[in-house]
Length: 340
Image 1 (cartoon, helix red, strand yellow):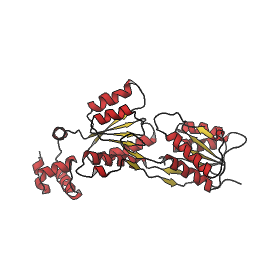
Image 2 (image 1 turned 90 degrees about the vertical axis):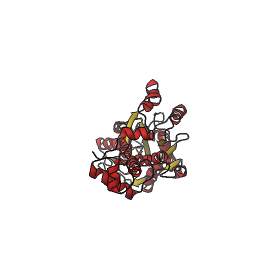
Image 3 (image 1 turned 180 degrees about the vertical axis):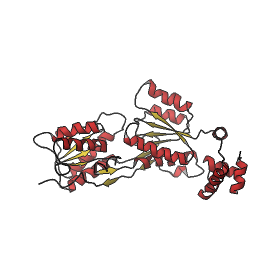
Image 4 (image 1 turned 135 degrees about the vertical axis):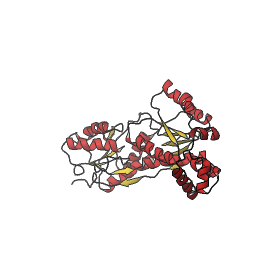
């Protein structure tokens, strides 16, 4: 069986460099890392994870905490994080933290300790001050996605700006009677996501000098079925029907498209519909939407964690405490100028 010394000899480097290259602990140039990996593969050398953990005090395991695992956005973020972690030789342990009470507390007080994770990523999850303090007390690097989390490096998307972009797209097409279908204002687990996207819509309409009646706001909890119900109420009334709908997510928008078709309406001839996310089904439904690149969010969170875990490889203090995430309007066939 090949040893670390054999790998070092074949790669032309020291055993210490082989250890750093394969463990990710410490700085090694990309070219050197490539030579070490090639030599290890040639010799069939696999580093002992238990020995590495004992030597470094780390488990090479990152905990990812999410409110849901059955929704596209969260699964996409997890996929992006997992790929980035695998490239660096790390494992991922997933925790669902939707409910309150003893089950939620046990994640912080028992499971994160029992699994001995090296760091934690919290995805679109509102943590209490006590929960954040527990994480900091573990002396584990922590990155939030969709914050804000007090004292935590956070990746954030400008949700009001995202909703304004959708609305302004419809306004530019000539729509004036535009409705909003999005999450209820009291829905848990999404920070101010529901309120901020609704506010962004309202800001764009107000900027265009248009007052939106209360009946043009409909609750839909970021799922296809609730979007369907909301659109049935908006489009089924005999008078004052909107010519366009801004949906708080692509899943809600897809529900709106299905409802319009069931009512015998054509999208976009009779009603234009926009979403937010660029869901994997968005192109299939020809949906105009705003892409927020969730897989890229997961990968970026891992990069920030690596800065904290390996400060000698990057200047972690130079990294911003909050990072704005990119988004982009993707125009497809679900929007058009309103019919005369």
